[in-house]
Each structure stands twice: as structure tokens, then as C-alpha cells.
Length: 317
Ligand code: SF4
Image (cartoon, rainbow, N blue to C red):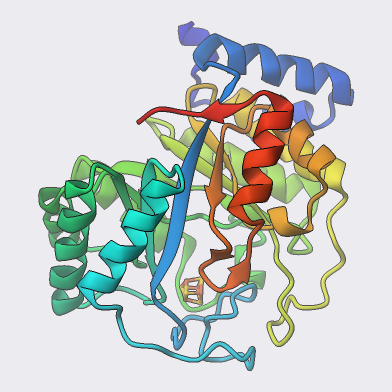
């Protein structure tokens, strides 16, 4: 079992996984998935944008950056009661984890106070809590942990080499530093990336190798397909081949066998068949709800029907 869980994956090792015949790769991914998880279970999260738009960062894929004209308006941080109403609705719809996202470079002290109150409130409803608020200091990470935060999401987005094509306002190392603070505070790490941003397979291998070098591996690994939003620099990027997306999921599963691999943004544009292949490749988490921050997501009814057709069921908390 120990040899399945490795932190010494080289780029070459990961590239070799990408180069496997498709069926061989899926077989390996599925075998490991079944070894560490009940392959019929899918963890369900709901993501709420608690502070939308107006972000000073320049992430080229993001409609919430204040630098791009995407029609997303800057809003204030949501009120506590409104967030708790959304959390109750998410729970009633079957979510086990409630993720709160804010479009900040990093939170200020008073923002952390507000989010801590939200974490306490959501937790008291019997949901797992997750937040994505940008870069965190040691103190902010500790305060969020003390409020009961279970997971913190902070993605690496892509390979170290391709990164500067996508973001210039914060460094790759700053992202790794935030992940280290989250881990040191005892909060579980949710960290993945986005594919289909014009990167090549070597970059996808570089992303997975960097994630798999984290020790321990992130508990949760979201793999997003770029949602091409008009007005962002990546609005006209060519779509990624669906099978290349499935391969990325399978490679993530093989490289990080015990992590929950989340089929994240981009599902709205994916066929049911592609999603079914992703589950076969080892994806075992999705987001429920009509929106992912500001971009569309399949309706919960459609997701429930798809899970039923595939014989999948929600993972208990
Ligand atoms: S991805 Fe996050 S940090 Fe980057 S522009 Fe969007 S909201 Fe800001």
C-alpha cells in the first residue's frame, strides 16, 4: 500500500502515465480508486461566492478580475444570515461540504473575522466547511482553523513553467507558501488546477507532479476544465479534447491514490458520457448547484439523474 502513495513522482514518471494507452491508464486509475475508495460514492460539495468580483489579481481565466470587462460586478461580502440560508439549502439538496469563495488577493483582518463567523455558523448546521479567500498568513490560517474550518482551497492552477502566462500578480512560490501555512494550521488542503488554458501535456504533467510532491498529498484535488468567459484573456482559447481531460483525471488518481479528485468547473460543457468516463478514471467528487462562483454549473436535478443512471450515490460525511 505504501508504494502506491509516493511523493517522488518525477515529470518523466507523470508524463509516462499520460503516454499510456488510454485503456491501460484507466485500468490503473480505476484499480487504485477501488483500493482506496468505494467506487460507487461521490462526495458532493456546494460552492458559494460570498464576495464576488472586483479582484485586483490578473488570473487570465477569471471573470472576477477587475482588470477584465466580463460583466461581473464587484459586490460586498455577503451578510452572515444570507450565507447560512444558502448553506441550509445546500444541505437540503444533499451537499456534505459547503465551500465559501471570496475574490480577494488576501483577506484583511476584519474579513477573517467575518469568515470565521460564517465557518462557525455553517459548521453548526452539520456541514463540512471549506473556504477559498486568496493568500493566507500564519495568523489567518490559525484563526480559521480555530473557527472550525475543515478545508482550505488554494489552487496551483498549472505547471510552474506555464504559470507566468496565466498570472503575474502573485508567484507560484507564494501559492506554495499559503498551502504550507494551511497545512501547518491543521486545515485539510484542497489544491488542484485548471486544464485547457492553452498549456500542453507537459504542463499538465508538471502540475500533477507538483501536486504529488506535496507531502502529504492534498486531501482534495479539484481538476477544472477552463470555462472560457468572454472578456477574459482566455475567452477564445481552443477547447481541450475531452479525452485529454479524462486522462488528466486518471493521472491525478494514479499519482494521488488517496485524495478525493474533484470534477470541478467546466462540467456544464461536458457530455454525460465524458463525465461518466471521468468517474471511471477516478473522479469522486463534484460541485452541486447552478453556479460555480460566477460561471454556470449543471443543475442539481440533472446531476442527481446522472448519478442514478451511473449507480453512484453521495459519499456520507
Ligand atoms: S482567480 Fe481568484 S485571485 Fe485570481 S482574479 Fe479570480 S478571484 Fe482573483
